[in-house]
Image (cartoon, rainbow, N blue to C red; front, top):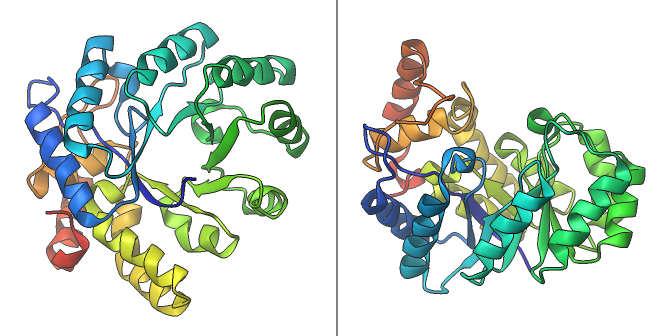
Length: 295
């Protein structure tokens, strides 16, 4: 159901911090032109936690008017409260997404029974659910036993966006469940490793800038040209790592500004990246193959 390259779309903003809907439309068009398989809207990279309900609705309206059903759409709806997650999911249903991305609740550190009930209530709204597992942001690392219970008791979980760096546990999960659901890479810098363990694709923040390269990496791997796929990844690796010199999406938005899609502005509590990191990114962008970049 969810295969290929999905861009976790950033939210372009004006220098004053307002959502730049014109830049958003251009970014969406550039992603479609790059050949992505889908788009993830209102996720972490979109700074969804800082967007108002009206802004979220307008972003989804703009996206629907540009995408027009040409690629799959996943909408991020998860929060650390079940009530607001359900409210967000109901609002998203008006745009008929292909699935909703629901992060494991952060800060609360729910126990297994609470976590299962949380996902059951979201799943009851009727859309396929992609479970977003990112222990580094949430403070909650799912054990194999809890994941077993979740997938048994919430069959509507159609995919996992896996952003854990524990590759031993990641591999255990992929071996056990890659046949049961879409196992999606959530770590841009580990894309080849995830493909090698039968991941169905990637949800990528770096693809905001480098979508053509990610699409080509995926196609080469699927065609059996694994060495060529990795060679392309290796060429881009330094820039992929540079996307995370500071908290995502600060560096991604700086890169987007450099290539003409909005400004580097992020909303507090995120702030402007350091001058040193800007210089590092500038040097890397000067040498990048233009074919790797959206346009």
